[in-house]
Image 1: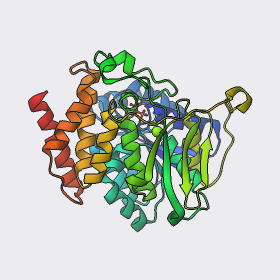
Image 2 (image 1 turned 30 degrees about the vertical axis):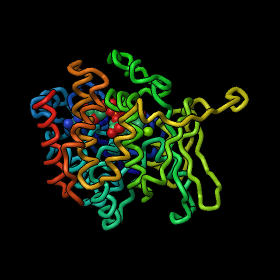
Image 3 (image 1 turned 90 degrees about the horizontal axis):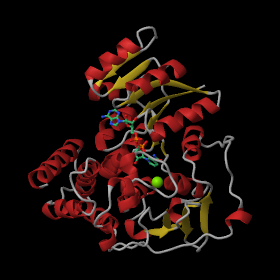
Length: 380
Ligand code: NAD
Ligand code: MG
């Protein structure tokens, strides 16, 4: 029995992780954490019997304690609760499927407690990769990517030498607005941006996929996971999301991982690594597929991707500004307070106003996030 804890169990990755648990008999859920959907949490407690559950607000935690009064579960709340879930003694691996850089402190706590990390929460690595990767090495824990592109790269690198990588080819679907120009995007509504062509995901990452900020975050995530400079990460648009990413080696050989778009594959690959397990569902049929096409990304229209390369180049606290500005801008767009094109504008403005701090500590990262949000609040 492999024992797992899940941060963000009610979300898209969280529920698919539980589906993987349901499909196999040898995973045990020891702890769960989620934001506010206590009805779904209650169902999850009844089905998977974790001993510990964290909810963000104490008010919701109180409600959940009543709902689950007949069950043998302890309900905790707040950041302390998230950290308790990440460090609970039984868990061997923590799936970080929470959204946003709120995942930084819990992820660090999990590493310090010696847990392997199945990492979906890319914002944490983007902002604190320089702290997390050396820490994982120090504590001897594995960081196993759940993001489909990074899982693909990880699979392509199996048995290969890091120093023999020439470049990473990070594939992108191009999102729902592929081929559009800036003028076409002026009146984009929340519903339009939430319509992803290939993947069903949480709202924030779906908006990020439409602006290509998601690919920018993934480029920085790849930089930390695989220790590759951004100049050696090339974004390749491949609209059907069949090739999940590729690696080109020094001799020119390119290795790719392909499959139907199903997040359960990278999730279970991370949970069972280095083994593969059965996964029911649709398989690729190359006779039906017939072609796979490629394009260059349009970094002028999708300024969010261009800005990600600029943030990575500046380094230090600049990726935090990029990410924190995007997190707040996306939440404002989702609540219809700002137009779609304000998202990259806000990121660009915040980055221009910021002087990067080299090697920021966790406190400096969180302070940079706070200042970035304050700046946005003063103007938008
Ligand atoms: P989601 O919005 O569907 O789920 C987020 C989860 O985090 C929910 O369970 C929510 O309750 C929880 N959460 C949010 N704030 C919280 C808080 N303050 N305290 C405790 N829990 C909190 O998001 P998602 O699409 O599952 O994405 C999760 C992460 O995985 C993101 O970082 C995303 O970029 C990454 N990711 C997602 C996908 C995907 O297919 N959905 C693919 C690759 C990477
Ligand atoms: Mg991805």
